[in-house]
Length: 144
Image 1 (cartoon, rainbow, N blue to C red):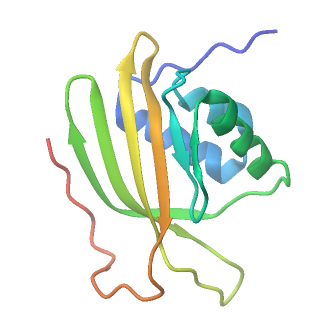
Image 2 (cartoon, rainbow, N blue to C red):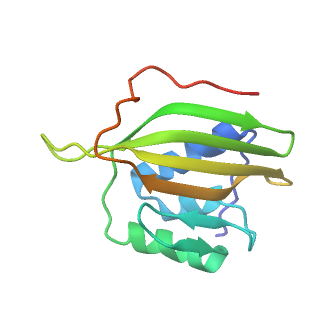
Image 3 (tube, helix red, strand yellow):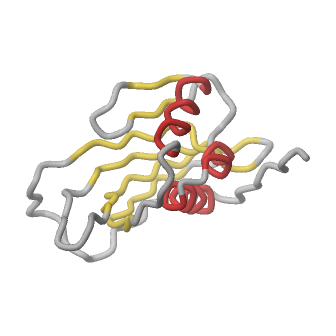
């Protein structure tokens, strides 16, 4: 049976699908969020630039191969939108075991609108310094 692709009616909905797939380690859901376009780009924290569906999709297969789930919280979301694109900038906070804390990961996600709704075109996640004095738990801002 062929899986019907999801329709994301907004970049925010596509982003929710991306982070849900990441937290669950759900490869099918993760691949469903991405545009099927050779122009897609993914940079995992500390990793190389991966371009095109073959490299990007293979990276997610490898990440999810170990199984398990990721506990993740997002903060400081800033969105810039146009009619056919949206750029989301945020911090990803990955939970460790009891007593473990990790510095946040700075992420930029770019979405494009097409015939199948909104899809991810770029995910760029970078480690941040051990201590960030400008971070607080207040919500980010949204730009239009």
